[in-house]
Image: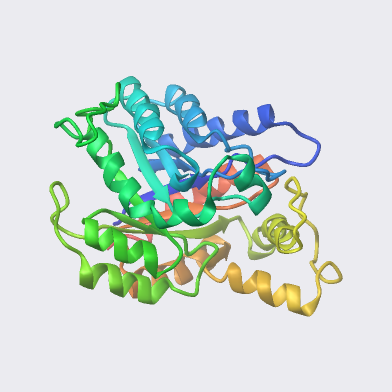
Length: 332
């Protein structure tokens, strides 16, 4: 049985506040911990009306403080937005507060629109091109030796915080393989490069200290409910969120609707359904059949699940039903 983990964006429902989102995120993490999920990751986004996880390191600290054993981390920190030294100090602080429980996933995208990227005081082109060097610099800050630049991360030095490379294309797969790092692919919104990225990562992987073999985590959308109809209805909140992003009008998470007919054009429907191709939505029986096939085909070392759900009870129940499937039907 492969480990299951959870990705969360601290979604803000329409009519609610970031405080409400943080309370629900912590509740979800505590629930995931009780159910035996391995990790709970949060992702950096900016200027998104329905996502409250912009100050990702701060929120990781909040979740880690409210849990006991589950690994908590970033899925991820968008490194072009930050100085590697600042990231090292932030995650060195987290690792000092919560030893053995902090993960650092790194992405190359800005996680924001062009105007927001400028507001972050970053050069999107230059920073992205610098990404491999920034990853190496960050690794050096977590190492035992004084980095070549003579700057020590305090805290951070000697803590060897686990670093992951995140990706939705071949770029991240190639870099993770070259550096010998664990790789997490965002198949929950970027399905096109899933198979070639897996092949590239596994075939080109070079062993590194602490990572003798490749380690692949795949992120997918999973929403389990008592019936197919109930699950599909809750999933309309995620479809609506993706639709608004594609229109350039991100909004807080909307309540589910009975049908999406009339809410999107045929072209918009095709685009949203393509982006959400790797979504496993339905009753326990339906999800077990499709998810088992996905796991058998792609052979991930770990599966990370996410869902943009309006109803908190449905989010919690989905993790419960999935944990039952994991233990009963999705094992070896």
